[in-house]
Length: 442
Image 1 (tube, one colour):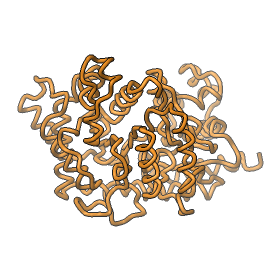
Image 2: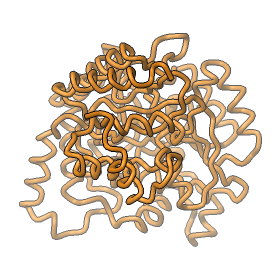
Image 3: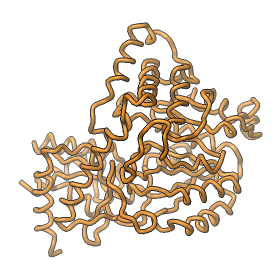
């Protein structure tokens, strides 16, 4: 059966406008998903999907019932508050206090249509704060769509692969970039998508100190909040250890907090922005001139940028979010323990891969520690480029994305453990064994 029929695979790629191996390697995640789905239909072979970071656990029923009840009460007939309903603002604030250990007041909690909308709005607004600052710095590897957003809105992008400068070395590299005076904001995820590296408290202190010194705003993406599963004590509300955050070291920060992975609520596009209260109240002359207002950061972000993207987050979704945040704060949704399932899966997948000639690309964290197991992982084969590996694996019914798309300096691919079912592990092992037999002598 493997490799799959080359004509069918190649023709399907062409149907998506991906005529060459290079184009397949640079395809967006959703474009690759479409290609793979069509190959499945044409061949009748189910792929092992590692390309899309989709939850593999059921949605939290507390959120579902809260939405259901809100709809029955008639919320669907009314526009939601653009600033967020009081319940989601209050329990969002409590959630941040319970699991991150920061005090972000209710008025600084704003719901967004997933963290994707939140990042888009922030990148747009932050690039308007100072005419001299026209660039967003990404700590790579990164979630590639966030860079795509910058491309869409015409914001320049700078990159720094954090895997090349851990610990104290990060300070020197960041300072060189900040000294250009071009950086409006920097964006990173922690744990990192795709490498699952985790920034240390010392590294976060470095970022915070330099962000304050050079007046750079920080977007901290906490999509995988408290999912460094090496720390077995995390996850009890209002008790340390909390999620490490740059918010302890600078006021120039906005946190992206998504319900997609924590509560397996990806389909409802539910997230919040938690804006540092100092930053929320800051007034920027460039914003005042552009929007003919007082230039206050939070007010402009909400009533201009977010309003123009969507006149509020779906009303019922806000009630669902509020209910899940409340339940988590009360210990009724142990989301850290629930999502630990991803670490178990990733550990098994890595074992299968390493037994068949593959290796972990971003294998070490700070201080030489092994990168933990979690939602994402990276893998490579020999010295192949990620593009080459993608173009070979697709014929074996395995899909993932090239690390090139994430800004990584190392070659390989990003895999996601969530969508692989338990019954697919033997099939994964069989396909990788055949792949290795076919290419080990190349």
